[in-house]
Image (cartoon, rainbow, N blue to C red; front, side, top):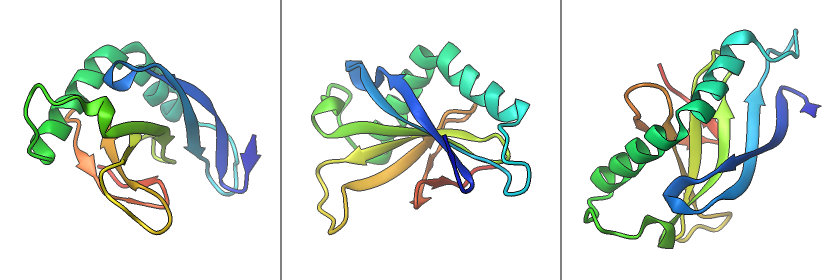
Length: 129
């Protein structure tokens, strides 16, 4: 369903060993309001490479938050959505349940494209590349 500049749907994530239905958010061009081929490719790459990407995300979080390698990430973190930007970048938004916030748990995004970088988010918008 397209609402303004955002197409919203559902996807499945098995991040941290727990399969969950999560949001899929695809930002579309304000004039065209269609999902472009590079956006579809980025999402399909995530689905096709999910196991490898999940492991890379685990490594990024352990390094970024200075956690031990045997830390149970599912006890603290939960995937909330997959985000695909207008330019075709793709990332997975993750809530950190250890931090309190007035509106919601702290959310960050790990880029699913090669490099798997941790990025800040502003209203679930992914800024990469």
